[in-house]
Image (cartoon, rainbow, N blue to C red; front, side, top):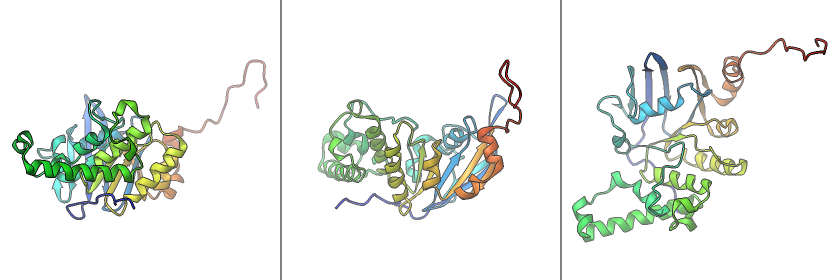
Length: 276
């Protein structure tokens, strides 16, 4: 029987984004964006290219500074002295659009890196090879193997990322994020490069996280988004144009216009052909 995926280790936490604005050289990337992601909820952030989705993730993670507004997680502001290396300590983990795995480490070692913020032994113990460090390393390795088993890629634990198909690398990257035992998981285009069958398997994995953590998902594949998300937030030109259930968003005409553009009422006829 597979070991269960680890759950949040700091109790229930909620992400709140309040009137967040970000600009780059006079270009508004986010304009008074407000949204929330509660524990046990899968929230999708969607919108056409350039809508501000990745910028939102980068502000949450501390890569980009906001001009105004606030983001809080479990009541703590993420905009005050917040840096990317603080993320896992706050109970938030993120996957990247690519995989971001270390080429010189095995899959197992890459996954073990995800537990770094929760390690109890200090660097001196590790350097001297003391029993405390060795015991903790064995514990982390067991947890990493359990995660790889749960995600169906345990047989690749001792291989290097470059020798593996891209979908296997994506699962290893997901396992590394889960090693931090987050209360909130940020998934940045997890389905990129996957086949339809692989996307279905990914959807099953994401839905299985609902009882363990909140999930904030940025994704372009609408079939996956509609099948896994409890709520959707739609961005267009940095503004929230719709929020709600997948069914409500699907029927929103403003969302359809953002994705497809205005309807074309007249089509130029080909030379020599009569107008229809």
